Image (tube, rainbow, N blue to C red; front, side, top):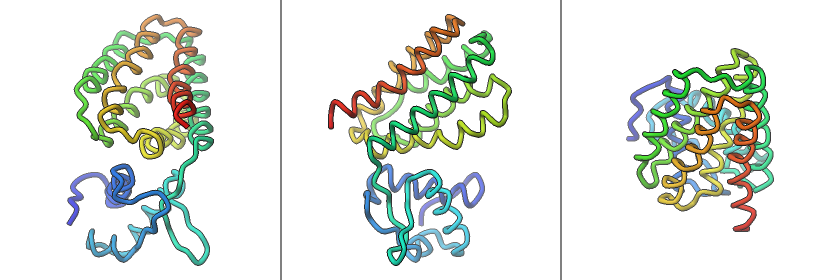
Length: 214
């Protein structure tokens, strides 16, 4: 039985299914059988369906009439749209406070960078968690709860990117530190224009790489 030891039951189930997708246990286009999840987690059908609905909102699974639930095939266009929105929200946040990060903000980012530098191959959950934590500092500082909520709802794009494009686990882990260090270095300048340009470059780096590999 998969261990579910923290967060709410629905959140545990969501993460467990998400990791099955990230790790390739559930491949793109494959059906997700509710009964198999029920047998694995030994819980009622309600939390399973709630979890699948959330993953559908995140874009990782899809429902089709007479076909049920399956792992969604993610296109480069999907990733581009999500990254475009995420970067736009982050730049709006930076513009709202003029890029004036406190020393505490920078220290918090540096602590996350140190953890990124120690990432292990294939640790997709940690990749996503650390990426989310660092970018959330940038958005949360604006003190705009609706903007933060919109960004959080779109931030699953980082998860999708790991699933759809970052198939090399070692390279994925290795890439996190240098690309985020460039972003943190920009934040250290407290220059709004420099930071916004760095945010755009950060998100488009993945898109440009995937386009080159297509």
